[in-house]
Length: 456
Ligand code: PLP
Image (cartoon, rainbow, N blue to C red):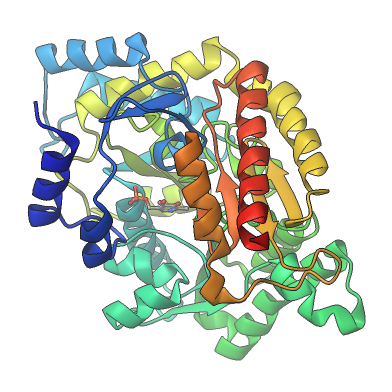
């Protein structure tokens, strides 16, 4: 094997990392992650790190699960690949489709598989347009999404997403995708503070921006609204409780399809199997990836609700699909993963035990002098770091306080992600209370170290 320095050198010579400034990375060298177990990862220097991000929001059952490894091995030996294009199908894909129909809300009896979250959201764009064509309303093309949303990196995924750098770099969005503001009370509700909007009032206000946009475009041209139940990559932004029910009413009023991007919020993350159940919506389409296999192998897909499924059933061929749609090894791992979540009662554990416990402990962290807002939803959490606790005034961007805090975490053996000055976590759902205490102690310590550095 190679030394850390050798890995780093070869890495920067050949490997372009996603969302990374290669020159900056080359100067400091990548951290080489070599193995993992339970909720921990280890680097090539032997340091143990508590992974409070579940990899990239995906390792819901934790690392090193034999059931998943065995399911993959068995399937690789029996049938490593076959497609579902030639009027063919494989047992694991059929079994997974059946299982998904069972664990998702009742309107979902059908699934279209892909390889990732981005592909799944691309499929949504095509499905939505196909649906309205089949309804004889081809002029319904516009999909409304939200600023600061993340829906993936393909052309359609990045267009649906509302990240301005991604739009600038790709000449995006593609036509007929538009964005409204996000339901981010701390950033926006406070701006509208002259009116002193409560969170609940702000939630209704943020939903009304959808109605305004529909009126601006013309209801007869709007095809769908897409949103993450809780915006993840945007900074774990938990919307006010009034937001989603109002969004649902607006979509119903105009007959617009509601799409829930459950790539992060699916498979127990929010304390229900899917985030739409926590938020109280009834989506027509629902995308998933990540937690479906706990990230052990790539898989994604779209749950297709009865309204769209009925139209498709009578519509002839839907000219769309991927080589890896319903990949048998990925599907076998997904089946094993879902059965494991069921057997260990991980969704209930998040709902009844670890989720409420995290909420309680984050409410305590809200008292820390760096923290302007602490939010949780199930096992997702956000800490907004601020210069002035009372006014909520931010630090100057040049200070890069979020990155400063993240660097302390890295040194102390904790993976916490920084979105600007918002520190976010999404730990494995398999986490015990004792492990949660260990994580929370590390978080507090890193906040203290950040504060001390700022006071130097
Ligand atoms: N949708 C959401 C909400 C996501 O968070 C992500 C990835 O983080 C995606 C879509 C894209 O998924 P993938 O990276 O698997 O393409």
